[in-house]
Image 1 (tube, rainbow, N blue to C red):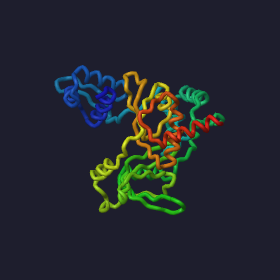
Image 2: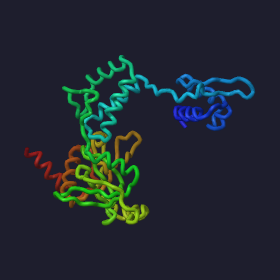
Image 3: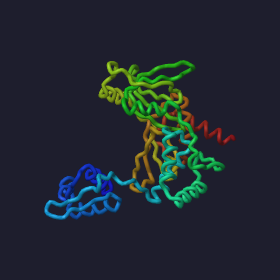
Image 4: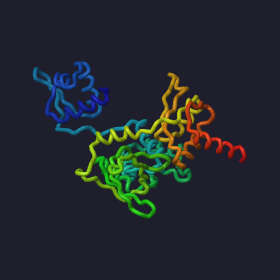
Length: 321
C-alpha cells in the first residue's frame, strides 16, 4: 500500500473513533511503531486536531469530534487540474455541467496569485479545438449527445440494455450486453453483444433515442456470451513489422481495435496483427488511408490482396495529382 493511500485510510479510521493508540494503528495496518508515529505526525500536520493523552492507558483522540480536514491542493495540483480542463475542451465529454461547477468551486478555493497563474496559462496554452480568440477557462460549451449521460448512468447499474436507435428515419431497438463504450474519431460508440442475433454490434451514440435495462427473464448468461464471442473472432489477415518512424505515427493515431507488440526493449520495432473486413468498403478505405499515414517504415508480412490493390490505387492517384 502506498504511503499517501495508507495515510488517507488511517485518517478515516481515527476519525470514526473517540480514542485510539499507536499499538492499535500498528496492528490494524500492519506497520512498525516508527511508521505509525510518522504517519500520525503527518496527519496532524495536515490539520487534523489530535490530542495526546499520556500515561499507561494513554493514546490519542480527535479534538471536539472534529471531521476530516479540508482538502488542500498544491500549486502544481491546481495547475494540473486546470490544464486537464483546458485540454478537454470541445471534446464532447459527458457531465459537462459538473465540470463547469467543479471549475468554479476550484477557483473559489485558491488564492488570487494562483488565479493569476491560471489566467496566464489560459492565455498562453492552446490545445486542439481551442478558440484562440475566446480561451476562457470556464467556456466549456462543447455539448455531448444528450443521451450520453443517461447511457452512462444506466450502464453503471446494468450491462444488459435495450437500446433504441434511429436508422433510415425509423426507430429500431436492439437488446445488447454492453462490452465497451468508447470514443473514436470524435464520435461515441457502443460496442455490444446483440442478445437476439448473438453477434457483436457497434451502435453510434449519435443515433441513440432511448436506453433502458433489458428484462432479466430474456437475458443470456454472460459465460455463453463470452463463448459466442470467442467463436466469432476473426482470423488475422494483416501482419506488419513497424520501424521507429511508423511507430511514432501509430502513437499519433490508430484505430481503437488495433494494437502493436514491441519486439525490442527500446520500443523501436513492433509487430501489428489484426483482421480487416475487406468486404466492408468503409473499413477498407479507412485502413488504406491509415496505412499511408503510417508511412514507408513498415514491412508487410501478410496483407489481403484487396488492401494491396486499394493501396496501389491510392498511390497512383497521389502520383497523378
